[in-house]
Image (cartoon, rainbow, N blue to C red; front, side, top):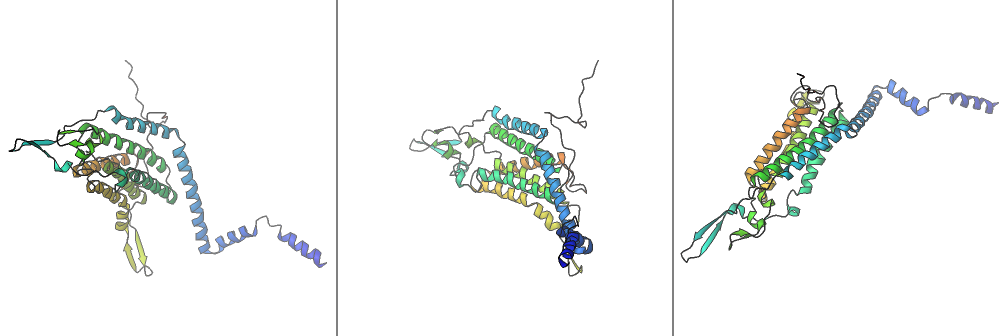
Length: 336
């Protein structure tokens, strides 16, 4: 009968173990070149996502991260052991013809103080710049072109870099004890008595600039990471227009784009002079310290950003806490 024949045909059609959508997708990928390219791109994206997730998991759930955090904590505590340098208030006493004594103040230290909430780059904005931009850059690079060990190398070195930068700059601040441009207002200087009403440690922490040092170390480290990961300094990037008749080079443009974080750090540093929060020498000193440390820590775990292997990290460093690796250089006491 017609009903039995239709049932047999439907049963035969259902015998295919693969769903119709899967069959169609597989046939399209094999038969049509464009569809095959799309399928290959989708598989590559899934593979990159899995590799990136595994890299972040290895970096975050590791004993090595605990040792790195321990070193960062120890480095951040070093400035607490130093004593703040106390300088006498700069002033000159002039005896007037009337017999009165007049005090002349240093004009470069008599600027108005701008509260932190009203500054161009307050402390919380600086924290977001130094943490969010490097984290976002590393996350995007790990998803676009994951490299084994790159996330771990970046995370450990970046944490140590920021901790050491803070420790060095804060220690120099306490050791030098140089006056800020708003010293007189911050300490409540009394012209009559020639002394400060209240001692302010922050008023003697001008050199070097913490904003300049922290931002330059984080942003230069990020720029070096972008240059190395994209290999923009060792490869030629170009854009073909008009069926290949016109070629536009993009290497220089991409290289400048990778330096955008450094330009952001320069703006942060310049804002400190604009608001009379630091002297120009303070900003230059902070930028030199932060930039030097960024280069040292980057080259410690990554290849030269101008080399062919700039996207490949070196071996992840082992710290002294909980580190067990055959590659570690062990020191043995010589037996007599």
